[in-house]
Image (cartoon, rainbow, N blue to C red; front, side, top):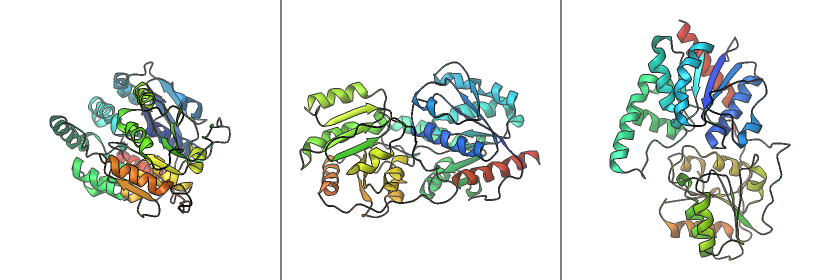
Length: 364
Protein backbone atom coordinates (compact mmCIF):
# COMPACT_ATOMS: atom_id res chain seq x y z
CA UNK A 1 0.00 0.00 0.00
CA UNK A 2 1.32 3.46 -0.93
CA UNK A 3 0.38 6.82 0.56
CA UNK A 4 0.90 9.40 -2.13
CA UNK A 5 -0.24 12.62 -0.44
CA UNK A 6 2.91 14.75 -0.15
CA UNK A 7 3.79 16.15 3.28
CA UNK A 8 2.46 19.69 3.76
CA UNK A 9 5.20 20.67 6.23
CA UNK A 10 8.88 19.74 6.33
CA UNK A 11 9.71 16.56 8.19
CA UNK A 12 12.70 15.75 10.37
CA UNK A 13 13.91 12.28 9.37
CA UNK A 14 16.58 10.40 11.32
CA UNK A 15 18.34 7.50 9.60
CA UNK A 16 21.33 5.47 10.70
CA UNK A 17 24.03 3.05 9.55
CA UNK A 18 27.15 1.41 10.90
CA UNK A 19 29.71 2.80 8.41
CA UNK A 20 29.92 3.80 4.74
CA UNK A 21 31.94 0.82 3.59
CA UNK A 22 30.09 0.45 0.32
CA UNK A 23 27.21 -2.01 0.70
CA UNK A 24 24.05 -1.69 -1.36
CA UNK A 25 22.00 -0.83 1.73
CA UNK A 26 24.18 2.16 2.57
CA UNK A 27 24.43 3.29 -1.05
CA UNK A 28 20.63 3.29 -1.37
CA UNK A 29 20.35 5.11 1.96
CA UNK A 30 22.53 7.94 0.70
CA UNK A 31 20.45 8.26 -2.47
CA UNK A 32 17.27 8.45 -0.38
CA UNK A 33 18.63 10.98 2.11
CA UNK A 34 19.78 13.14 -0.81
CA UNK A 35 16.28 13.03 -2.29
CA UNK A 36 14.59 13.89 1.01
CA UNK A 37 16.96 16.79 1.56
CA UNK A 38 16.49 18.13 -1.98
CA UNK A 39 12.75 18.30 -1.34
CA UNK A 40 13.22 20.53 1.66
CA UNK A 41 13.19 18.12 4.58
CA UNK A 42 15.59 17.97 7.48
CA UNK A 43 17.69 14.80 7.55
CA UNK A 44 19.89 13.61 10.42
CA UNK A 45 22.19 10.71 9.53
CA UNK A 46 23.75 8.86 12.48
CA UNK A 47 26.81 6.74 11.73
CA UNK A 48 28.90 4.53 13.94
CA UNK A 49 31.87 5.91 12.04
CA UNK A 50 32.04 8.04 8.92
CA UNK A 51 34.51 5.78 7.17
CA UNK A 52 34.47 3.88 3.92
CA UNK A 53 34.42 4.73 0.22
CA UNK A 54 30.84 5.98 0.32
CA UNK A 55 31.89 8.85 2.59
CA UNK A 56 32.73 10.77 -0.58
CA UNK A 57 29.07 10.50 -1.61
CA UNK A 58 27.51 12.03 1.51
CA UNK A 59 24.75 14.41 0.34
CA UNK A 60 25.11 18.11 1.00
CA UNK A 61 22.90 19.62 3.66
CA UNK A 62 22.30 16.61 5.88
CA UNK A 63 23.17 16.74 9.59
CA UNK A 64 25.78 14.11 10.39
CA UNK A 65 26.29 12.58 13.85
CA UNK A 66 29.22 10.21 14.41
CA UNK A 67 29.13 7.86 17.39
CA UNK A 68 32.85 7.03 17.36
CA UNK A 69 33.18 3.35 16.46
CA UNK A 70 32.75 1.31 13.26
CA UNK A 71 31.37 -1.68 15.18
CA UNK A 72 27.68 -2.53 15.51
CA UNK A 73 27.40 -2.29 19.34
CA UNK A 74 27.96 1.47 19.11
CA UNK A 75 24.48 1.71 17.57
CA UNK A 76 23.03 0.80 20.96
CA UNK A 77 23.62 4.49 21.77
CA UNK A 78 20.95 5.46 19.25
CA UNK A 79 18.15 5.85 21.83
CA UNK A 80 19.99 8.74 23.44
CA UNK A 81 20.53 10.42 20.08
CA UNK A 82 16.89 9.99 19.08
CA UNK A 83 15.72 11.38 22.41
CA UNK A 84 18.01 14.41 22.01
CA UNK A 85 17.27 15.38 18.38
CA UNK A 86 13.56 14.36 18.54
CA UNK A 87 12.90 13.50 14.86
CA UNK A 88 9.44 13.04 13.39
CA UNK A 89 10.32 9.54 12.15
CA UNK A 90 13.21 7.06 12.35
CA UNK A 91 14.23 5.16 9.21
CA UNK A 92 15.98 1.81 9.59
CA UNK A 93 17.64 1.06 6.20
CA UNK A 94 17.71 -2.74 6.31
CA UNK A 95 17.25 -6.05 8.15
CA UNK A 96 20.81 -5.91 9.44
CA UNK A 97 19.92 -2.87 11.54
CA UNK A 98 16.64 -3.94 13.13
CA UNK A 99 18.29 -4.89 16.45
CA UNK A 100 19.28 -1.23 16.79
CA UNK A 101 15.69 -0.24 15.96
CA UNK A 102 14.45 -2.59 18.67
CA UNK A 103 16.75 -0.93 21.20
CA UNK A 104 15.37 2.51 20.28
CA UNK A 105 11.81 1.30 20.91
CA UNK A 106 12.74 -0.51 24.12
CA UNK A 107 14.50 2.50 25.63
CA UNK A 108 12.09 5.23 24.50
CA UNK A 109 8.79 3.39 24.85
CA UNK A 110 5.79 5.66 24.30
CA UNK A 111 8.10 8.60 23.55
CA UNK A 112 9.56 6.81 20.53
CA UNK A 113 8.84 8.34 17.13
CA UNK A 114 7.49 6.02 14.41
CA UNK A 115 10.11 3.55 13.18
CA UNK A 116 9.97 2.51 9.54
CA UNK A 117 12.26 -0.31 8.39
CA UNK A 118 13.14 -1.43 4.88
CA UNK A 119 13.44 -5.12 4.03
CA UNK A 120 16.88 -5.26 2.44
CA UNK A 121 17.60 -9.00 2.52
CA UNK A 122 15.65 -12.21 2.07
CA UNK A 123 13.61 -13.29 5.07
CA UNK A 124 13.72 -16.93 3.98
CA UNK A 125 17.30 -18.10 4.45
CA UNK A 126 17.90 -21.57 3.03
CA UNK A 127 21.61 -21.51 3.79
CA UNK A 128 21.12 -21.28 7.57
CA UNK A 129 21.55 -24.25 9.87
CA UNK A 130 18.23 -25.52 11.23
CA UNK A 131 18.59 -24.16 14.76
CA UNK A 132 19.92 -20.82 13.51
CA UNK A 133 16.98 -20.58 11.10
CA UNK A 134 14.57 -21.36 13.97
CA UNK A 135 16.03 -18.52 16.04
CA UNK A 136 15.99 -16.16 13.06
CA UNK A 137 12.32 -16.90 12.38
CA UNK A 138 11.45 -16.28 16.04
CA UNK A 139 13.31 -12.95 15.87
CA UNK A 140 11.33 -11.92 12.78
CA UNK A 141 8.09 -12.56 14.66
CA UNK A 142 9.14 -9.95 17.24
CA UNK A 143 9.47 -7.20 14.62
CA UNK A 144 5.82 -5.99 14.80
CA UNK A 145 6.44 -5.13 18.46
CA UNK A 146 9.01 -2.45 17.66
CA UNK A 147 8.47 -1.48 14.01
CA UNK A 148 5.55 0.74 13.08
CA UNK A 149 5.82 0.06 9.37
CA UNK A 150 7.84 -2.09 6.97
CA UNK A 151 8.79 -1.18 3.40
CA UNK A 152 9.49 -3.91 0.85
CA UNK A 153 10.92 -3.17 -2.57
CA UNK A 154 8.69 -5.55 -4.58
CA UNK A 155 5.26 -7.14 -4.07
CA UNK A 156 6.76 -10.60 -3.51
CA UNK A 157 9.06 -9.24 -0.81
CA UNK A 158 6.04 -7.55 0.80
CA UNK A 159 4.17 -10.85 0.89
CA UNK A 160 7.23 -12.52 2.41
CA UNK A 161 7.43 -9.80 5.08
CA UNK A 162 3.77 -10.18 5.97
CA UNK A 163 4.15 -13.95 6.26
CA UNK A 164 7.45 -14.11 8.16
CA UNK A 165 6.81 -11.13 10.47
CA UNK A 166 3.06 -11.75 10.89
CA UNK A 167 2.32 -8.19 9.80
CA UNK A 168 -1.06 -6.98 8.53
CA UNK A 169 -1.17 -5.54 5.02
CA UNK A 170 -1.77 -1.99 6.27
CA UNK A 171 1.65 -2.00 7.95
CA UNK A 172 3.58 -2.94 4.80
CA UNK A 173 4.25 -0.76 1.76
CA UNK A 174 5.95 -1.49 -1.55
CA UNK A 175 8.46 1.21 -2.49
CA UNK A 176 11.47 0.66 -4.74
CA UNK A 177 14.89 2.14 -4.06
CA UNK A 178 15.68 5.34 -5.93
CA UNK A 179 17.42 4.45 -9.21
CA UNK A 180 21.18 4.72 -9.53
CA UNK A 181 22.38 7.64 -11.64
CA UNK A 182 25.65 8.41 -13.34
CA UNK A 183 28.17 10.21 -11.12
CA UNK A 184 29.83 12.89 -13.23
CA UNK A 185 33.08 13.14 -11.30
CA UNK A 186 33.51 9.43 -10.53
CA UNK A 187 36.96 7.98 -11.14
CA UNK A 188 36.99 6.04 -14.43
CA UNK A 189 37.15 2.25 -14.34
CA UNK A 190 39.74 0.37 -16.40
CA UNK A 191 37.53 -2.06 -18.32
CA UNK A 192 38.82 -5.36 -19.76
CA UNK A 193 40.05 -5.18 -23.36
CA UNK A 194 37.91 -8.19 -24.32
CA UNK A 195 34.32 -9.30 -23.77
CA UNK A 196 33.63 -9.69 -20.07
CA UNK A 197 31.23 -10.73 -17.33
CA UNK A 198 30.71 -8.18 -14.57
CA UNK A 199 29.81 -8.79 -10.93
CA UNK A 200 29.02 -5.86 -8.63
CA UNK A 201 28.81 -6.28 -4.87
CA UNK A 202 30.74 -6.65 -1.66
CA UNK A 203 33.41 -9.33 -1.53
CA UNK A 204 31.67 -11.23 1.25
CA UNK A 205 30.58 -14.82 1.79
CA UNK A 206 26.92 -14.00 1.10
CA UNK A 207 27.74 -13.04 -2.50
CA UNK A 208 29.39 -16.37 -3.35
CA UNK A 209 31.66 -14.94 -6.04
CA UNK A 210 33.57 -18.23 -5.78
CA UNK A 211 30.76 -19.78 -7.85
CA UNK A 212 31.38 -17.29 -10.64
CA UNK A 213 35.15 -17.77 -10.54
CA UNK A 214 34.68 -21.56 -10.67
CA UNK A 215 32.46 -21.15 -13.73
CA UNK A 216 34.98 -19.07 -15.69
CA UNK A 217 37.36 -21.86 -16.86
CA UNK A 218 34.35 -23.99 -17.83
CA UNK A 219 32.94 -21.46 -20.30
CA UNK A 220 32.95 -22.24 -24.02
CA UNK A 221 34.91 -19.08 -24.84
CA UNK A 222 38.33 -19.14 -23.11
CA UNK A 223 38.86 -15.44 -23.83
CA UNK A 224 36.01 -14.19 -21.63
CA UNK A 225 37.17 -11.98 -18.77
CA UNK A 226 35.61 -11.40 -15.34
CA UNK A 227 35.41 -8.00 -13.67
CA UNK A 228 34.41 -8.03 -9.98
CA UNK A 229 33.64 -4.60 -8.52
CA UNK A 230 33.53 -4.38 -4.74
CA UNK A 231 35.55 -4.82 -1.59
CA UNK A 232 35.29 -6.96 1.50
CA UNK A 233 36.66 -9.64 3.79
CA UNK A 234 36.53 -12.40 1.15
CA UNK A 235 39.15 -10.76 -1.07
CA UNK A 236 42.04 -12.96 0.10
CA UNK A 237 40.25 -16.32 -0.44
CA UNK A 238 38.92 -15.17 -3.80
CA UNK A 239 42.41 -14.09 -4.91
CA UNK A 240 43.74 -17.47 -3.77
CA UNK A 241 41.04 -19.21 -5.79
CA UNK A 242 41.93 -17.19 -8.88
CA UNK A 243 45.60 -18.11 -8.49
CA UNK A 244 44.81 -21.79 -7.90
CA UNK A 245 42.74 -21.95 -11.11
CA UNK A 246 45.35 -20.06 -13.13
CA UNK A 247 42.96 -17.22 -13.94
CA UNK A 248 45.10 -14.22 -12.99
CA UNK A 249 45.06 -12.93 -16.57
CA UNK A 250 41.26 -13.23 -16.85
CA UNK A 251 39.97 -11.90 -13.49
CA UNK A 252 40.19 -8.29 -12.33
CA UNK A 253 39.10 -7.11 -8.86
CA UNK A 254 39.81 -3.36 -8.66
CA UNK A 255 37.85 -2.82 -5.44
CA UNK A 256 35.03 -0.41 -4.72
CA UNK A 257 33.94 1.96 -7.48
CA UNK A 258 31.64 4.91 -6.96
CA UNK A 259 29.83 4.51 -10.28
CA UNK A 260 29.47 0.95 -11.66
CA UNK A 261 27.05 1.90 -14.46
CA UNK A 262 29.73 2.23 -17.20
CA UNK A 263 31.08 -1.24 -16.36
CA UNK A 264 27.56 -2.66 -16.43
CA UNK A 265 26.75 -0.96 -19.72
CA UNK A 266 29.78 -2.36 -21.57
CA UNK A 267 29.65 -5.87 -20.09
CA UNK A 268 28.42 -8.76 -22.21
CA UNK A 269 26.48 -10.09 -19.24
CA UNK A 270 26.13 -9.24 -15.54
CA UNK A 271 26.13 -12.00 -12.94
CA UNK A 272 24.79 -12.34 -9.41
CA UNK A 273 25.67 -15.57 -7.58
CA UNK A 274 24.50 -14.84 -4.01
CA UNK A 275 23.12 -17.26 -1.45
CA UNK A 276 20.56 -14.67 -0.40
CA UNK A 277 19.53 -11.15 -1.35
CA UNK A 278 16.66 -8.76 -0.82
CA UNK A 279 15.95 -6.95 -4.07
CA UNK A 280 19.42 -6.84 -5.65
CA UNK A 281 19.99 -3.35 -6.97
CA UNK A 282 22.63 -4.54 -9.40
CA UNK A 283 19.99 -6.44 -11.37
CA UNK A 284 17.92 -3.28 -11.82
CA UNK A 285 21.05 -1.30 -12.66
CA UNK A 286 22.24 -3.80 -15.27
CA UNK A 287 18.81 -3.93 -16.92
CA UNK A 288 18.69 -0.13 -16.96
CA UNK A 289 21.84 -0.27 -19.12
CA UNK A 290 20.46 -2.92 -21.47
CA UNK A 291 22.74 -5.67 -20.11
CA UNK A 292 21.31 -9.17 -19.55
CA UNK A 293 21.66 -10.77 -16.12
CA UNK A 294 22.37 -14.31 -14.97
CA UNK A 295 21.35 -14.63 -11.32
CA UNK A 296 20.91 -17.30 -8.70
CA UNK A 297 17.48 -17.63 -7.13
CA UNK A 298 18.67 -15.69 -4.11
CA UNK A 299 15.29 -14.18 -3.21
CA UNK A 300 11.68 -14.13 -4.30
CA UNK A 301 12.35 -10.77 -5.96
CA UNK A 302 14.88 -12.07 -8.51
CA UNK A 303 12.20 -13.49 -10.80
CA UNK A 304 10.17 -10.30 -10.42
CA UNK A 305 13.10 -8.34 -11.85
CA UNK A 306 14.13 -10.90 -14.48
CA UNK A 307 10.55 -11.49 -15.57
CA UNK A 308 11.26 -12.41 -19.18
CA UNK A 309 13.78 -14.76 -20.84
CA UNK A 310 14.78 -11.77 -22.97
CA UNK A 311 16.23 -10.09 -19.86
CA UNK A 312 18.35 -12.86 -18.42
CA UNK A 313 18.35 -16.26 -16.75
CA UNK A 314 17.65 -17.36 -13.18
CA UNK A 315 19.44 -20.51 -12.01
CA UNK A 316 19.37 -22.61 -8.80
CA UNK A 317 21.88 -21.45 -6.20
CA UNK A 318 23.87 -24.70 -6.03
CA UNK A 319 23.72 -25.72 -9.70
CA UNK A 320 27.12 -24.92 -11.18
CA UNK A 321 26.26 -26.60 -14.50
CA UNK A 322 23.18 -24.39 -14.89
CA UNK A 323 25.26 -21.32 -14.13
CA UNK A 324 27.81 -22.22 -16.83
CA UNK A 325 25.06 -22.99 -19.37
CA UNK A 326 23.28 -19.70 -18.69
CA UNK A 327 26.48 -17.69 -19.04
CA UNK A 328 27.39 -19.50 -22.26
CA UNK A 329 23.93 -18.70 -23.65
CA UNK A 330 24.37 -14.96 -23.14
CA UNK A 331 28.00 -14.99 -24.25
CA UNK A 332 27.20 -16.24 -27.73
CA UNK A 333 28.46 -13.51 -30.12
CA UNK A 334 25.59 -11.51 -31.56
CA UNK A 335 23.09 -12.55 -28.91
CA UNK A 336 20.41 -9.78 -28.77
CA UNK A 337 20.58 -7.61 -25.66
CA UNK A 338 17.49 -6.40 -23.82
CA UNK A 339 16.26 -2.87 -24.35
CA UNK A 340 17.30 -0.60 -21.47
CA UNK A 341 14.59 -0.67 -18.80
CA UNK A 342 13.72 2.68 -17.22
CA UNK A 343 12.71 2.86 -13.55
CA UNK A 344 9.22 4.16 -12.92
CA UNK A 345 7.53 5.91 -10.03
CA UNK A 346 8.73 8.34 -7.38
CA UNK A 347 10.31 6.38 -4.50
CA UNK A 348 11.50 9.51 -2.69
CA UNK A 349 8.02 11.01 -2.74
CA UNK A 350 6.39 7.74 -1.71
CA UNK A 351 8.66 7.50 1.33
CA UNK A 352 7.91 11.10 2.29
CA UNK A 353 4.16 10.54 2.00
CA UNK A 354 4.43 7.46 4.23
CA UNK A 355 6.59 9.30 6.77
CA UNK A 356 4.14 12.18 6.86
CA UNK A 357 1.17 9.91 7.50
CA UNK A 358 2.92 8.11 10.36
CA UNK A 359 4.14 11.39 11.88
CA UNK A 360 0.58 12.76 11.82
CA UNK A 361 -0.67 9.61 13.53
CA UNK A 362 1.90 10.10 16.30
CA UNK A 363 0.77 13.68 16.86
CA UNK A 364 -2.88 12.57 16.99
